[in-house]
Each structure stands twice: as C-alpha cells, then as structure tokens.
Length: 404
Image 1 (spheres, one colour):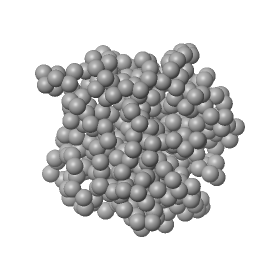
Image 2 (cartoon, one colour):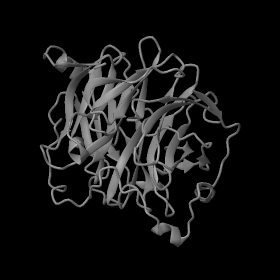
Image 3 (cartoon, one colour):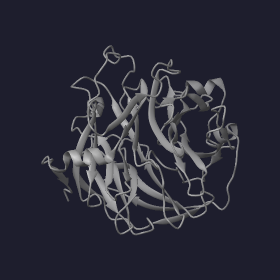
C-alpha cells in the first residue's frame, strides 16, 4: 500500500508541537500515566556499577572503545537508544535520550561530539528539552547534499508518539556547539525512522525505516518504509510489512543488485528479513533468519567491500537477560546467511543491559558502533572490519541461514 502524505514543510516551535499532539505543558498533565519502559528495569541495580571486562578487549579488530560520558558526571540517571553520524571526515555526532528512565516526563534528547584527533567525546548537551512530555529514539542522518538531520519522537508512549525532525545547521563549529533550525512536526501518519538511520538512494530518494505499534492488549507491530524525493518536504508511505504483528524497527541496506533489503526486530525469537525492489516500494513477506532476536533493537550497514555488517543481541533469553550479549555478524551474500564474527559485550549471566546498537562506516573505512551500556552510559566502539573478517575466514565459524 502507498500513501502520499504532506504537501509542504511546516516549521514549528516545540511548544506548538506539543500542543498539536494533544500534550499540555501544564503541571496537571505531568501526572498522567506514562510508558514504563520496555524492560521495566531499574538503573539502580546493585551490580550495575561493578566493573566488567569488555568481551572484545584484545580482539585484533578493536581500534578503540570508550564510554561517551565516562569520567564526566552523567547528567541523567538513565541513557538509551543512541545514534551516530560522521558530520565531517573524522568528526562525529552521537545522540540518545536520557532522563529518570525511558518514558518518564523528564526524558530529553542529548548530543555529544567526537574527534578522531582528540579521541574524546564532549560533555553531553540536552538539545531537545521534554517540557513534561518524554522524547524517544533520536536518529541522526547526513543527506547527500551535506545537511545533517536529527529525527526524534515525542509523546506518552510508542503507541501515540509523533515524529519530529530538525536540521543541525552548524554541526561542528569552533566553540563545540551546535546550531539547530526550528523543529518540524512530520505530517500525520509519518513517524520518521523508528530507531535506525535512513537510507538515501543514489538518485536522491530518502527511505526512512519506520514502524507502528498499535495500542491494545494484542500489541500488534508493523513495519513501513517512508520515502521522500525532496529531502523530507513530502512523503510517501509503503507497507505494511508484517509478520503476524511481531516485527518492528527495521534497518535498511542495499544488496548487490541495488535492491533494498531490511532486517527487523522480532517477537518470534529470530531476526526477520524482507526484500524489496530498487525503490523500496514493494516488499516480500518477512522471513525468519537463524540469528536470535530476544525482542530488542539491531542495526545493519553495507560496507564499502559489499559485505553487510549487523550488530545484534545474540541471545534467546527474554527480558533484560536477552540484552546481555551484543554481537557483530557479517554476511557476504546480502543477508541470505550470516556469520557471527565477534562479541562486543557479554554480561556473563548477570542482569546487565548492552543493547540498541547503531552502526555506520566512516570515510576512512572504520566501523563506528554506539550502544546502550547498562542504561548508565552510551558506549562507542571503533572496529577495523578487515581484521575481524580475516580472523574468522578460516576459523570454521558457523553460518546462520534463513529459516523460511
């Protein structure tokens, strides 16, 4: 199904955005019930501050690993759902949401920047204040013409949130600040990228990997692709892409034939995948892969050498326990089969969360991954993809194939 939405770009203030979604800034509305978070976990567990050796420490592919906040005092108790973009060669921006906990009224969007030369992340700044209404899942993306967009959602829960976008006009100025344009409420029915970065085709069409969570006890999920040929001024919506109401948060990449593919978070124990045409308009029914998916986020990117790199939770456990092992997989056949090449984090059976990865390949070929680190921080890992592929090439590492 295709739906054409939006005839012009409307710029609004944040206060007007909140008003248009039926959200009041008055104190009385701050007491309304809010989303309690996917895992219903606390960020104050006794074992979370105990040091844990990274599972990737000493691996030949590891270039660098660090916590974004690290020695800086965490500005909020809980940090989740990061995104990363290369603003200019060697300089990066990361964003995530932070507050008391996911879905609470004080959850805002935060931003930090990193330079390969200094190898340090800046002190995080809150760039979207919540004003009593939680914000969600920021996504950074650099358009072909150079502009950097920040997408995010705002609302009481994922069943009612509204998509919003902003342009970072001056992403890396000399005083380490960022200049933003006015926020834009996306047209009704357009969510923007649910979690993962858009894909821009060679001819300029912007494809946003979106999904919808329907309210109600059945918890029905559907994936969509939102397409814009004018850098976000107007949109068309393709879908739904469904598998028994149990797939969400797609990640997009191109295969060797320039067809658009997606992998999806699933509530069916395994990661799902689907294939489209070269425009991302018509999609096959999703199939399950043999890679585990404990109902948590993942991300993928096509590398310069045409391999597909996937970051995902390699566990069949449920709840927070399923978010304790974060791994990297590689496919040499466009996602038909996958090979797990390394483990980024392993909780060792403790209830520690390493989840919601974002991944890009920088201009110098290095792979940059950010992810939630115990909900206390955001971790940044830099990998040399040539090293872990060569390490596993002759090691007899098993391949994971499509199940259906």
